[in-house]
Image (cartoon, helix red, strand yellow):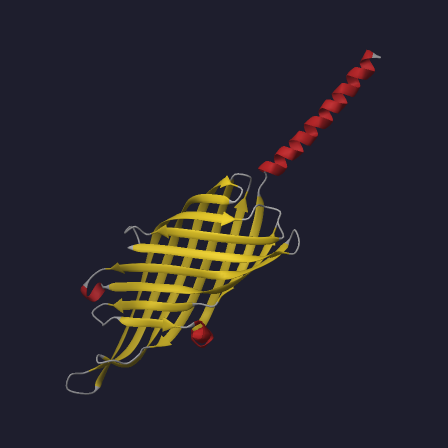
Length: 254
């Protein structure tokens, strides 16, 4: 009889350990999230190359498809109970006509912008994550302008330059607790600090609905601000541009 009880106790203990192990693995296990998205950006600010005069960048969201040659955006996240690792990739190839002024008769400006951020966040609360990241920026400016001559006429000038730098970023993310159908996320970042950009910041705010364990849709608004300059004289490069606009995101949980 004692043997039967002993066997029963062993079996119950083994079952309990299995349940505890399964619960631990679920809590400690990693989940994955992939999110392609579309941004309809406004771009405003100033750029400059070498000794050429500064040029205004002014592309409205209702003009973006007239000027956008190519664009791709993808967000990826791996997370567990305490940590979140994420990657955010954004690439845009935008061209616009240069507005004429006293120095420039006409011309075209093309900006190819790659932004790739890798970040690690710690879950302080179910609704709050804080962490650090590195934002890789690679900007290629191509300029083809007709410059006014003092005695009359114009001179055609073509110039292109690519600059790549990394901005350290401090990040805070506010979101609703897991398991909700209606979802929201607010993400704020500041960085640069003269290491890359003189100053860089981002703000994102989204709300949406989770239709199933697999799929959700969010919409909102994003602002990316970069104030970067380097070099002098013929090597001078300025990119002081704010990119902002509505965003639609399609999320897949794994």
